[in-house]
Image 1 (cartoon, rainbow, N blue to C red):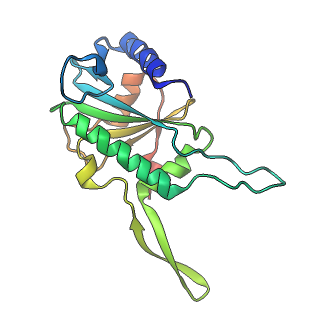
Image 2 (image 1 turned 180 degrees about the vertical axis):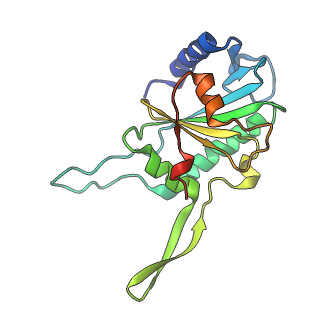
Length: 195
């Protein structure tokens, strides 16, 4: 994954070719926490978070087992922390549409991993010879920590996936079509994978 600073610079250039006014929010002279990208005329703020803490390795086709792989509870906690940080920054942008852009190294299958986390991690108990779901824990999209985030945009390095935050107010949210217009790209709807 390329460094965030380089990605942000390239993204600002790309977005300015589509709609002028995009700037690096971190360069604002303010004591407030700022979003990574801000367009004051469109009233849109974007925070970028990199998914680098927990790596995912696909098991080999044959041979040895992989010792370490992705732990969904760790991934869920990481995303919750990222969302809480972005939510806090977005409070400084009242009346702005907001997007948390998550860059991930899960290039091959981010849909399954993230949709599972967005849905909430499931807990099961054994009943006879069957398993029954008893609860969902570590719910990532808790209302209290994400109301300022209008939507989540996953970028796998190849493709974008969007999920509109159901907990956000109308002023914060962007429809998928709006996000496609901002980025001038076809974006896959992550919502259809979330239960």
